[in-house]
Image 1 (cartoon, rainbow, N blue to C red):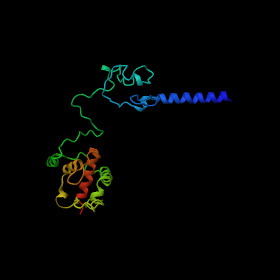
Image 2 (cartoon, rainbow, N blue to C red):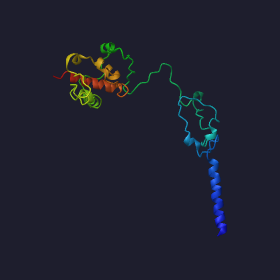
Image 3 (tube, rainbow, N blue to C red):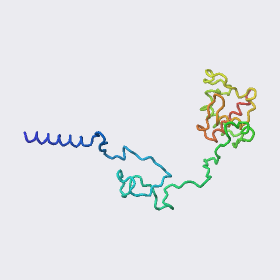
Image 4 (cartoon, one colour):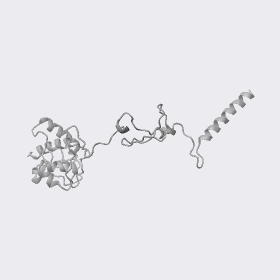
Length: 210
């Protein structure tokens, strides 16, 4: 019995020594199990690390190379991801170029921009109405009369069918949605280009209402 108690105490003491050896103390940071789980490496797609030993101290890879090695010997120049050619412009599914007219050039946008979407398309109008309900209704109201629930608190939201607002061009409306105007926030980062043009088509219908 005494021998068993001594044996168990020995195991407990050994366990305490092991745990104590792993703990941090002063300048010693301690030991970690699977450090790559605690100190993950940010993914840098355009980086090029050719040293197969880089990150070997945390590597758990079975191919024998370091954790940070990210070259691909099967591709030209060993690149896993190559930088795009100079002056490359990213295209979206609708093949729209990025909108480049500056924020302070609304008059230019009003003159030169034209809506690429079909004018009398029921599909475009229905999509524009749905987008309008999500992004525009809170301030402008369901019929574009400037009577949305937010307008009850922040006065001065215009009606689309009154005065100069009834004659705003499609370019003017698109530019305003993109950059905002007055107390209206910009929506360019929230709504993609084609969806902005769909909203413009629907707003133009609201401009014609009596």
